[in-house]
Image 1: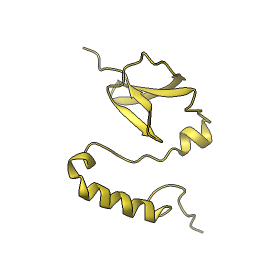
Image 2: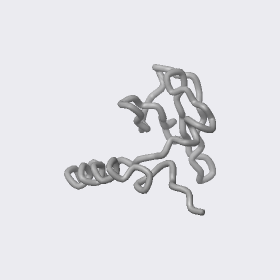
Image 3: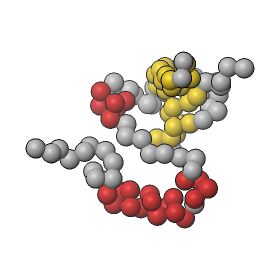
Image 4: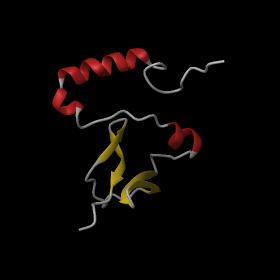
Length: 95
């Protein structure tokens, strides 16, 4: 038995077709962005992005993301966007 994926082009083909056309129209932007399935954050961890945000850092060759209460003073050197809002931020790399 094969299950239909919950995320991705096989699950939402019209969305990904439109996204591919948009990336074709703006190739320089396409190289800066990726689409991420939010199943782990929303369905499994039950993150409430109205109250929390992810903060990522590089540690021992891995990207570690922790979900913390929102802090408007936190820098956003990079963002993961959700409904037009930055919800995943990066700690600046160590100097």
